[in-house]
Amino acid sequence: MSLVMLARNEIEVKISHADPVAWEASAGLTAYPDALARMESVAAGIAAGSEPERVWLLEHPALYTAGTSAKIEDLVEPNRFPVFDAGRGGQYTYHGPGQRVAYVMLNLAKRGGDVRAFVAALENWIMATLAEFGVQGERREDRVGIWVRHDGGEDKIAALGIRVRRGVTFHGISLNVSPDLNHFSGIVPCGVSEHGVTSLAALGVNVTLADVDAALRRTFVPIFGPISQQ
Image (cartoon, rainbow, N blue to C red; front, side, top):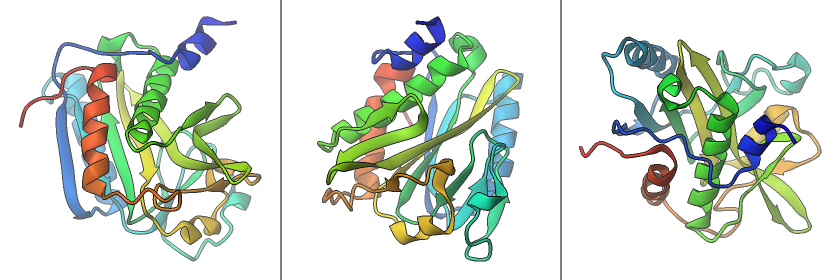
């Protein structure tokens, strides 16, 4: 087995660094173009050494995003919600109210530079967060994202999409807390048609975004290192 595969499968993958990471949560709904512009700015600042690494938690209004591998036939209802070119890896995804998006802007060059290890660390972070609510999340080697088994099948509960520029990561993860799952029907999410999507609420786990934010913060530190005290 290759070292790359071992990095992704290793449950205790850590890419920690001594410098604390800034932690920010935005209230309300953040327009997608505004989020893209801010990520670009922060990532450039991190690369230049003028900005601290940052995790930014937010919600978007209902929209679809297209990654660099998106196939136009997977955009089933192109007029349903606004569609944005995300510039990240992956295919089509949905963002909207009730979904916690975490944009992760880290200096990967200072954390070993291994993109696959970084993806594995993001997956572990999501799975550790779900475990705080009694939900077992799982990765799949042939599919991106985190999956849960229920009712004899399995559905996607979290998506990942990243970009790395000048050694700095941006974009990140989205975790379905209580979104309108019908909104996913306007696309083939991440190009996977044979499985559905789910959420914590659909699994009977009734928690708030604030609850999820607290869990994300607790589980971040063992994997990525300290958070700055704000």
